[in-house]
Amino acid sequence: MAPDMGTTVETERGLVYGPSGKQLDVYRPAGAPRPAPTVLLWHGIGPDERDVLEPLARTAAAHGLLVLVPDWRSDAADGGRAHLLESLAFARKEAGGLGGDGESFVLAGWSAGAGAAIGVALRPESVEAWRPRAVVGVAGRYDLPARTTGAAPLADLAAGRGPGVPVRLVHGSRDIVVEARYSRNLAEALRAAGRTVTLQEPETDHAGVIMTAYDPAADRCVPTTAEHAVRAGRMVAGVLAEAAGGGGGSAA
Image 1 (cartoon, rainbow, N blue to C red):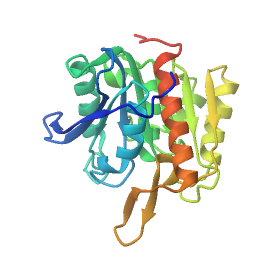
Image 2 (image 1 turned 90 degrees about the horizontal axis):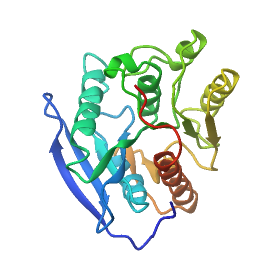
Image 3 (image 1 turned 45 degrees about the vertical axis):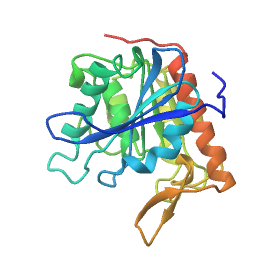
Image 4 (image 1 turned 135 degrees about the horizontal axis):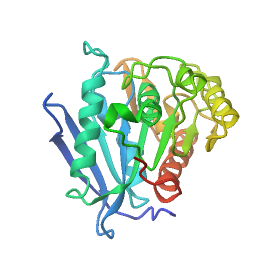
């Protein structure tokens, strides 16, 4: 699915997605045939930072995807689990009304959101035995408990669990916040178990892989036009598009 970089992206901001009252933003290509493949994209550990993913979400929407980006709070008593799962339930239920295809559904995340996404695929019982078409992890750690399940993805794999769907990983080779070895370890474990996985390592850092740069004054990631970040973000958007149009399918 090649992007048309002239594609106009429509944005709906601040949709309330569940009992918690948390909000999400919707990005979709204007005038594109509907329903569009759907991507639910989770941000990292910074509380309520859905705006951080806007550059990536807009770039992905230009590929013809409906992209939903929710807020969630890692500092909640449950580590964010309720927010994450509420946003997933909303996306599954409402994708069609928002112009998306609930069957061609990719679950993705960056940093702490990456482990949360992989965790769902490994433990579908946490979401009514549902699995996405594919899962995409960007700059994640997988040796820590997933925010969605409380179990570390690598531990689940070692115990014989499998994701049941293709896994696509992207990790900046210059990432010093979460080193690329964490994604390499997950990819190796998946391959050893005979699972479908790809890993790409663009030359960028933890913030650059989502088309941002860390601003110490603001203590958050902000959009950047740095070439390495733009190139990496376009790569991630392409991976999301490939995942949405590739094999797999919704598995019970």
